[in-house]
Image 1 (cartoon, protein in one colour):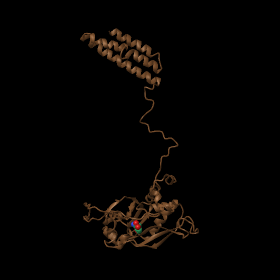
Image 2: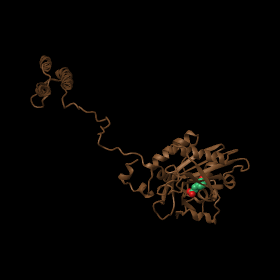
Image 3: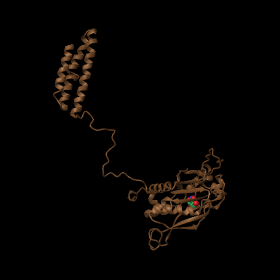
Image 4: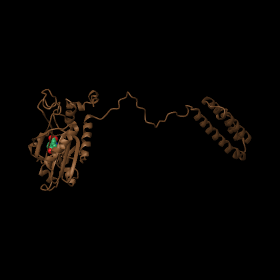
Length: 352
Ligand code: DAH
């Protein structure tokens, strides 16, 4: 029996050394390991007729030979490049064909990222705030007293729910709102931060508005504020000018008009001189020939807001501003209708 094993082994090695194509290798496999008539299979089948001593002797040797034949066959197949051995690697990333579009960032995301990059280069920290907030941070802490008519300026979505939670204050009143402005982060940040504070908060805000070409119920703002000793309006103007210079890639002229926002004093509406027509073209879609375009609201943070956050309003001052980033992108890219942003129409989106 042992002799048969070594005969089979040398015959197999002899045969396998002479072939190199996959079909022939398969034939050899069948002739040695085939389930019905493979030479080694037949021999192994005969083991059962042997005595126990013989089995102990021959069994392991026969199994060893079987393993040797199997691994030699696999090696030979690999050398032959057989399809039985996978010719592709499933863990590789897929190939991207040239005619498949990959998609890209939404124009509002693009302008937000551009703004974030510019502000970061000027040392501003970037923060996020809650979209569902309570009356205190969205209004009251920002110097909108409970019965103040200024609340009506911002058509608010009130949340009908008695959510309560542990906060520095008692929020047991049913006073949850979808934030109407990213200014809701002013008091929240100042409560926690020590001056100097320099941060921006880009984010989504919500208003119960009738929708038209310039109004959406869900839109994007970027709030920014700086608080320290000796912060002044000159620094506010310089900062805004520098931002717009980088966004519009040219020097810009700004104009400050008095504007009312309860959380700033003085407050301003900030206009930019039209970078498209310079006020010379009555048919200019951006300024309509007026020359000036309204860009944002800004001002010096009201002492009541600083006090609400626990600051010494005699010692610290700050400026704040709120930019509508969707509106800014409309100006920059000459987009005629705010509603286009949310419609998911590829003919629009693919232009950015
Ligand atoms: N939060 C205001 C709004 O949504 C915009 C604004 C105006 C923000 C003046 C400011 C500011 O920080 O100083 O209408």
